[in-house]
Image (cartoon, rainbow, N blue to C red; front, side, top):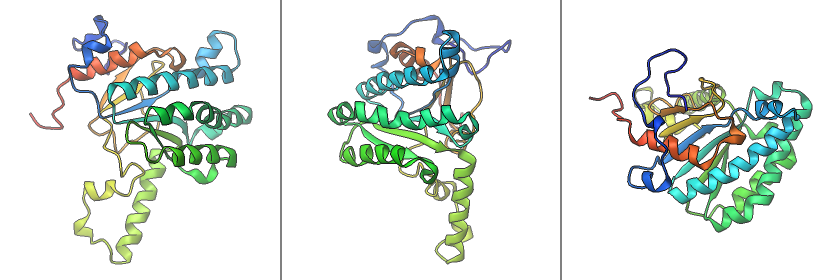
Length: 259
């Protein structure tokens, strides 16, 4: 596990030297909203001399395991960075495969999501998504709309700068129409113009594969989020890794700028 400070920088004492169990963390606060940058599928495949698509397929299995555990732990929302607006730059064969994964995942996993009371949502620019991808996602959203448990929120064709820019445009339009006065614009008001307007900001951000950057993910929403980085590649990310991340989250003091 890597703490926020890494690569020769000083680290504060943490729970990294202790292995926690699910029982250990149930006595502490469970993060209401966990966001995950699922990174390392390609490297996982490369390490095994497999095509990159094999890593993405294996990563889909991890999504299933982590979603089930998050639901069991009582997490309110789980936002997964599935495909960024920059990922279109990848080879077409890989992009086409990635666009098929939501259909495969949701078709296979949908009965379990319904049974476990999970509600599926999506955030991102849906207009560029292939019809088969969008149809699969919209079906899952429709069939889980009445569920009241974990919100499984996929960031699909999502980019935070695009989201913020679009939010500003909408706000300016409303101001021109006289619906919003400049003096009434607050952080809380602007947040309602973002794609996460019905969700609380993430309490814990997890990024796998050892990379330490946000990659244009929820830049506004992560202002006071606790970060947890790990060298573990996403396909190798196990239930115990999520438990460890939550255990460390529980030992941090969240002051939100106060004392």
